[in-house]
Image (cartoon, rainbow over all chains, first blue to last red; front, side, top):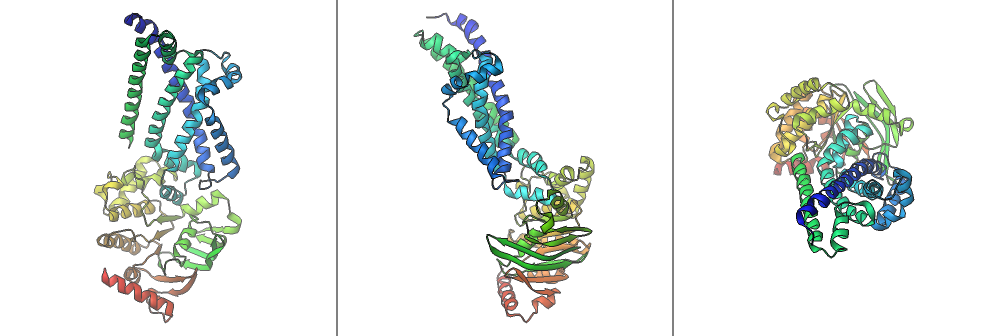
Length: 218
Length: 250
């Protein structure tokens, strides 16, 4: 059995900051890429502002392919890419690459859904003023979709947090790695369940913050 | 002033508008009436390109757009839309914006007007619609009649050459129709040019200077409301009789 206080100060807290670093960097980059993809998908969709079958199908298929990879396989499959970008395939910085590649298409789908839910009648009203497609997207559709986008991003943060545990299993560090190496592999249930308990609290905090923002913005 | 000549529109090979010509002079109120499926809403929506016509020439004020030459030129289409205002049957207000923000949105986003100036003009139009005390209310807090008056203020604030109204009272509870018609009557008296698709024959008779009866994608009869409603055409007589009957029941 491990001494609880030294476990917390020497392992859980440093690894917790690694987890946070991975989750928030990956979410930020995924959200930026995901947003761009979502806008392209929405605009090029056959009912969109500027239908383009080829662009839509190319993006749609690519996103589906990337999303088909089980995350643990994705980490291994893109090791050469990760090395080319970060210089290493181990550690929390390296983990951001697969986390982003898995996160961006996920966020793209969520934001696409939110944008598509924006009432067609509002888009017509904006068109009737003479608004350009750019104005319609950035001044009408996105502001109208913000609450729903926030709840999508909250979902994505929790999903990415789950993925960091898998990344932890292949050398990324973080709380997931603690649960597996110090807990599961050491037959130390206190550490394993303790870490999971910590993760539960983290998810609660993220979800409550997301729900709160949603309520305020709605 | 709005004038359209030789307007054609087909959906999936079915002709909805067949060579429609229409001219509405400055300050005129033109009521478009006719049975459902006659193409009246499509005609109205073609005038500002919310439906893309197949052929025809649209002239609003000093701006002329030839459909066949303009197809796909989004700049020309936006210019046409800036000359026209639109009021929708379902109001189409932005639910997350207040009444005032709804009115100023187009001024700020499209016309790039400074916020303070837009707010001033927005308040002016809300006041004209009798809604100055509702400026900070959200559409969800307004009645149907109030929503439609906000929508009219929104269209008018852009100072369009002509306002297009697509059955502006059809989605309203009967007791709220009057306030919207009254607001429109006030605009007509101020000389606002309007094209209005409506089933309110009484309103058309009282306010419109011009009526157009559409059937099967073409204009069957046009003239003053009295001329059109009094037409000997059997199609118009049976239509007017049916509407007259149902409006007595309301």
